[in-house]
Figure 1 (cartoon, one colour):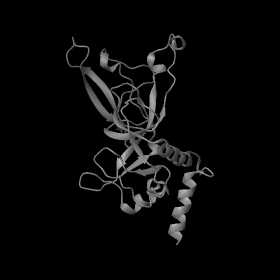
Figure 2: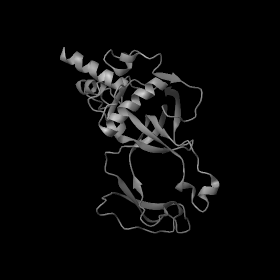
Figure 3: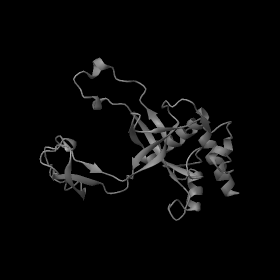
Length: 237
């Protein structure tokens, strides 16, 4: 791929930014696909209203309403196996979309059976932390991002965003959002591996931007500091 000359990928010109991998195992830097919710929307709650058939325990009529955290709906206990809830729980529904996402955190140590004795599996279920990518392109089907704003993101003016070009997908340019970091289960039905991962040098740079987002500071003597200084010099000249 040919990156723009003012991008962090082009300035350091690593041998590889994205690497192909035959392993579909999850590691930090893996590019995967997963259905992720639109986190900026108002969620809905699903309220069971009654069985479709009095003799059927796995089908029910439901009502879908906007969820207000200040006024949650009362818990509805119906003898329908698919809608069982426990104390303090509610059914929530979000619109979701299959997106490319970068694995930034992975659980490398599985909890031993002896240590989770007496607990349900969900208490210690393994997850990976991913940051979603959004397409930059603006067209009739996609809102995308304005070019001037994309340029500022590419120059790390807003460290909650990271500009990139993905080796797979339907868009040329993409924006990764650190501020939408979220867990995805490690179950094979929860994600698909793209067959690509970031090179070690690329991942180290992404980590530097993530550090800036998390702590508001640029690591001294890092490549990100070099890049930001170069951009500032070019803009000033």
